[in-house]
Length: 459
Image (cartoon, rainbow, N blue to C red; front, side, top):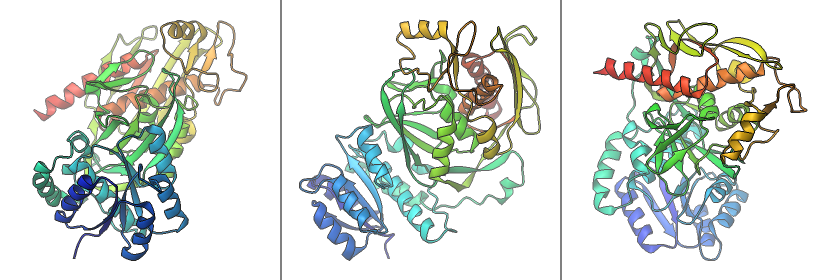
């Protein structure tokens, strides 16, 4: 008995032959067609659980096929594919109901990983108790960087067979406060917006990932990835940006903050090169995560437990500093001190769950001073800055006509940023972060210290 039925809809005969062979060897029952209309008929007769659908088809194209399929109300997971798409194409297919979107050239690991996730999602909808986890050996870090080369097919299949559906038993780990279960999303979701730095319209797709994959930013055009890790910091000027080789992910801190709050450990984030700024807060990202749903995974990740005080800067009321000290939980206390109209603001946030974060921290928007914004725009930055996504302040007043969301919205946003930057450590933190007048540069400097401690403890 096979693992399940897969229908391939693509007019590239060589690719269909290669995919069919690989999937058959992996234990799937495979059918194929090069025509969208015929695909609809096959879906009625062979009833596949998963469809690999090319966007660019002669006759009825992939978009039209997907629209017709959804009108049929057929219970099937669709994985869209394209070698000529962009973020708009990907977003369109996901919004039409596609489970995921793959850029060609495909990779063997990547195809197998996404198909296994699609089957797991299909099974969970029919059997809510099913785990359907895919093991860490199928991590898309390698999956999306290896071209689809059939000379390596046997190696890919062997690795996949050895790792798919291997369940990690967690009870022993759950007895310790230093461990918690990994999480991913239940399904792919999309978001349209604008880049704060570039000013360009952009979009973002969040997709589920297997255990131990981590958080990966993937360029929608090239398919190359950069991990959401302190090891790949490119810049902390006005925002936190990552880069590996020629692949960049900019303005990641608000999204990372929301992922931190919801304890998402494994997710693929497809973007052009910048996370949309939305309204300058993390509110939209919270809604996006809740729309996707959260899937607990059969693998654990260890907390970083702070054993002593680590600091950056001189710790005094009139100096810029950030520190973290032992604490039984995760708390961030931040103090800012600017001339009026801001003045002194201090807030202490105890992170207990995502609901509290969504109400107390996520709505707080980014802010800037008019003189700094003008200087940044002269340098070609903040091209997407608007009164709808930045709270602007001059020497006398707040420029925005809309009221603040909190009397102390500015300090709350600083805490939002801290949570985003600290999640680049790659795990939750057990400790109390205290900061005074710091920004991304100091946040990242302290996280780099903690990263060094973490690596030393492993040695």
